[in-house]
Length: 173
Image 1: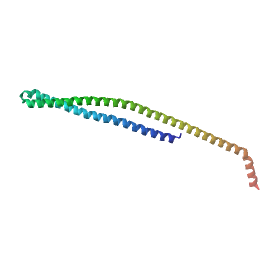
Image 2: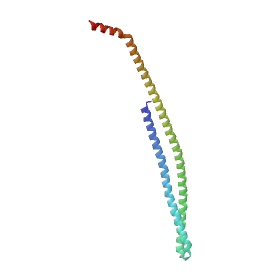
Image 3: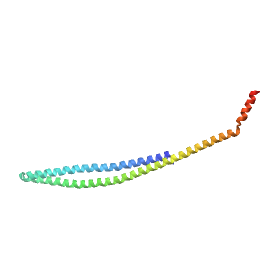
C-alpha cells in the first residue's frame, strides 16, 4: 500500500474511532443528566416530606381532625413519592456507574486503537525514508559511475599533446 493509501485508511479508522467515542460519551452524559433530574426530584420530595412532617409536628395538635387526616394523607403521599424517587435515583446512579465503567473500557480500547495507528504510521514513514535513502544513494552512485566513465573515455580518446602539435603545425603553414 502507498503512503497516501495508508493515510486514507487511517483517516477512515480515525473517523470511526471518533464517532464511537462521541457516542459512548453521549450515552454517559445522557445517563448523568437523567440522574441529576431524578436527584433533584428526590431532593424536592424529601424537602416536601420534611416540611409537612415539621408542620404536622408543630401544628398537629391544633388541627381539626379532618385537617389532620388530610395532612397525614398528604404526608404519606409525599413520603411514598420520596420513597419511589429514592428507588429511581438509586437505579439512575447504578446506570451512571455502569455507563461510566463502560466508557472507561471503551476509551481504553479507543486509545489503544489510536496508538496502534500512530505506530503503524511511524513504521510506514520510517520505511519510506529508508527507500528514499536507498534511491538517493543509488542515484548518487550511478552519477559517480557516469562521471568516471566520461573522464575515462576522454582520457582514452583524446591525445592532448598530439592535438597541440597538430595545431602548431597548422599555425606554421
